Image (tube, rainbow, N blue to C red):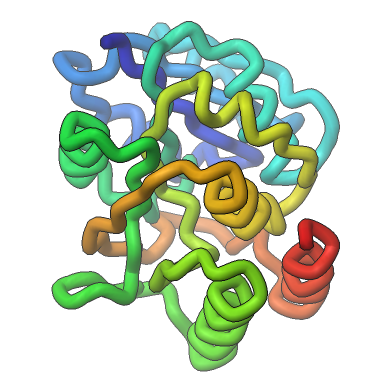
Length: 218
């Protein structure tokens, strides 16, 4: 089955060439870089590598992901951010979970052997709070609800009817997948520090959107 890798990018010229260098072309059949209107040369770097750039429809991280899904041609979908924080060496492990018969594979930063080098106390507390709510309110039963490092069949993702535009898509995805009866398995993964630049996540603003989404999905 063919594999599409979606990369969400917004002004990541100092990072994205490292991410593109790490792509395993023997594993990935299609690379789609969804650009949110970069002005720093990110698109030009991607084009020099010979990969396709999609102009993001709408604004926000969730909109970028949904744009990638819309145009992906692969049977299986996986994704990474353009900041270099996702461990691409774990992609084969995610795909192996699908081979085992699960519908969705999630990377987790909080299983034994996993870690997040990007955690602050606020982010750690927020993730524990939101993951607990996702499990308590919706019965999902996962260890990390804010790290959407996944592999899944495209038709499974399309069936979820995702509508979030921002980082709240991270909780909308597993909640809807659980409610539709899809099976999943988590693997231990490492979130690395971004290679350069500043995070696009605003702890207060995005945290409130995530909190609202948990209950709105219900």
